[in-house]
Image 1 (tube, rainbow, N blue to C red):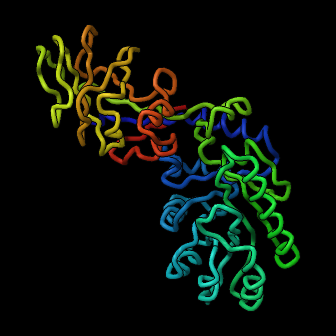
Image 2: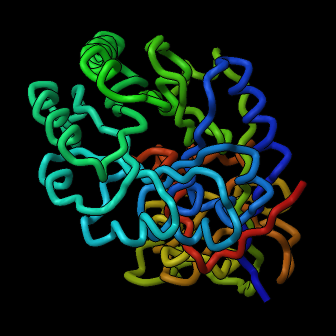
Image 3: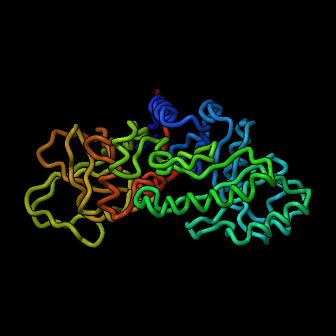
Amino acid sequence: MYNNILEVNLNKFKENISAIKKLTSKEIMPVIKAHAYSTYLDSRLDILNMFNIIAVARTTEAINIRKIGYQKEIFILNQPSIDEIELINKYNFIVGVSSKDFLNKINKKIRIHLEIETGMNRTGINLNDLNDIISIVENNKNIIVEGMYTHFSKADSDKEYTEYQINNFKKAYNLLKDKFNLKYIHSSASSGILFYNDEISNLIRPGLILYGYYPNEEAKNIIKLHPITKLKSKIIFIKELPPGEMISYGGTYITKNNTKVATIPIGYADGINRLLSNRGSVIINGKKCPIIGSICMDSLMVDVTGLNVEENDTVILFDNEIITVEEIANLCNTINYEVLTSISDRVKRVFVE
């Protein structure tokens, strides 16, 4: 029996898709890496078939999706290992390429998008190297360039820098457009979609906003999103403690009064950050109950003093209303992306309409 469940609302996901489509006419390539931000929507063929092309981060992710029956285009965002070309051909993937070395080693047919370095300084082809790249590709008939792309590093916070990146991307486009048949041109992930239009792109890469979460507060003025996840557990144990009792490892919490303590079977191995120890809360019977003591690998304790609770009562870790993913992220000095993708495979995913 699963005590810990991540509910994933399919209707809300579809509503988010509709909201994105109202913003732009560009084709959507959903980013479903990391098990679709831990929602496991990458296991739902009916959802995947809503799109003509989808994006993942790794070859293994692409193979898993192909094996469940998805027959349309799969784009691997990160340049793979050269050793993976046979698998890439076998499963008919498209891959992002960012280095001369990789291109020089290609000796089998492969479809690629050229990743352009415009200011992210992570991976990508520098503008100064583009002519060399063109020469390599033109002299290797195994390489089929189908697209080009880039990544914005500060689209949620720095307009001037993002415009600088867009201009660099346009420079690359002007060099490549007459050399290759560029079926797909893409630059914008969630923040780029909401705040910019690079004019030359015909494809967008929504990630976070697909799942109903905002990259910043300003985004709430642009699009209405519906968070699609809710994390739930149950009470498995209740005890009454007098003042002066220590709770959990390290005794970081000591009861000051008579205290009713409920144990919840979810912990940091399930994706609950230990920084929430003595800081975070859960929801029981519609009320916020503080987490007390250090969060354990498999469990955490909460103060339910004064509440009428019983074993097996539902506990909500976040519902995006009383407790939001953003509230948890702030307490942990991180971002909503990390809170979502940290939910481990020990938590059962349940799809609801």
